[in-house]
Length: 246
Length: 315
Ligand SMILES: Cc1cc2nc3c(=O)[nH]c(=O)nc-3n(C[C@H](O)[C@H](O)[C@H](O)COP(=O)(O)OP(=O)(O)OC[C@H]3O[C@@H](n4cnc5c(N)ncnc54)[C@H](O)[C@@H]3O)c2cc1C
Image (cartoon, rainbow over all chains, first blue to last red; front, side, top):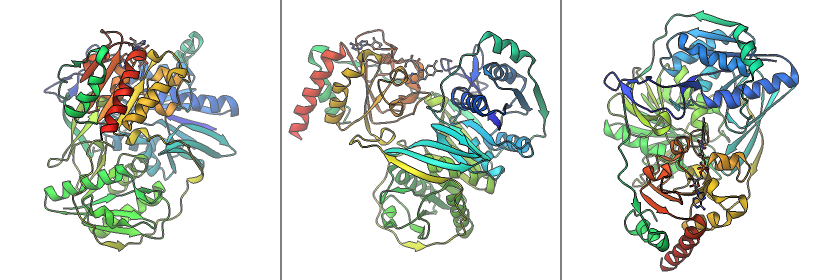
């Protein structure tokens, strides 16, 4: 099975969120970047498990500049066979998806896996766009994935329960928690990653249909009001009379 | 400006997130003097979408389930027929499957997970898991917006509206639904809950969750948990909230024995009122709290249950 896993770069979850250039860009000073957790923990690890069980090849793909290579190497260290970096700015989701689809269209991938969203843009958009561009079905937010004889079986959470879905490959599937468990790369993986193939593809720029004008930080919380633990019942009164939420 | 909005239903009722999307679409079109058409399917009394703000409903009776590709084709046909330049969906499962496809087909800018109404061609959305807000400019003629559940609210001030039959060539579904397992529980689904009682490692073990469930029941709240708690299997995965679990925005979030790590806060910082119960006065969660109790959960929670019972008795 040929699997493509799309991975994105995201600031470490403990990063300070601040902006520069008149609040028009994210302040990367001192920020450590990681592989977007949904892409790494769930999509990539499940792809590797499927390959280990059934044979095949796992390619990771990122759209982004040279600064992406560190996270691509991390994905290779975890176990991907080879990697592609499409050398284009990460402008909007439609441009990123167009680059992914243009690359993937004649490569014969059976499965395209993505994380359900990035933790910095929280879009949940790229998997659906790639599916539409490649005329493939999509299962969004799958929490379980199995493949038998060219058919993917997925489970996902729906209001009040779980849904079991089936789809013929090729298909695009976005991964949510539950699909796999995080893997920590070992020394052998890290060494091997240095020599694995990383193809850099140059592309023409696309026009973006959306652009971020500026960012703002949410208004600061007012100070916490403390309730005496010996008289905790007071909280219920405050929630009713003051906060008016019960 | 004409706006079309997709409305999803489940067990004969429109979902709360769909009604929010309809109210959002209606307010958006009204702000520029336009009309709002809700698009739906199947056998349901759709005139109620008028109460959430739709001016009219177009309904495809022949379609019985919401498949992402079929709803995409339905929305494309409705866009063509109406000439709508604004398209709204909820940022729920079906919205996440349909909106990106529409964006490709119409070459239209998509802003996903908006929590505020657009001003001109600028739409605000939460980014960095709720730690910042981006002002996104849409550069295309048609704009698509998906609305973050529990962020906009339902405005039910309207009246029932006319429902017109609408038909489109929607093809067949490639994703087959094999089974839907309804989890037998009376509890409220977490993403829709407007009150949530959540607990963390401070509860020491799964056997102590009885008091969390009881407090939730007395308050009419759903239950949630921190990531380690679901990772070690004390609670089911679907209760895990935070940056790598689900993000929720209830009116009331009560956190018991949760330290308030930044990754946890990322999933709950959109809550209107946050209450923190923790025995450590230095727990970072207090910085994000509106109300705090510094104390032992095993002493505080039983008092709260008793007080909530007493409060319910006066209602
Ligand atoms: C990439 C990444 C992503 C992550 N994503 C998430 C996520 O989505 N969601 C999430 O929750 N975490 C996430 N985490 C983990 C997060 O960093 C914290 O480790 C986790 O939230 C801690 O859970 P906790 O508060 O239950 O446990 P602890 O940090 O162990 O805190 C327990 C708290 O209980 C208090 N306590 C103990 N006993 C009592 C008592 N008797 N009464 C009252 N209080 C008591 C303690 O004072 C302490 O504050 C993530 C971490 C990483 C690195």
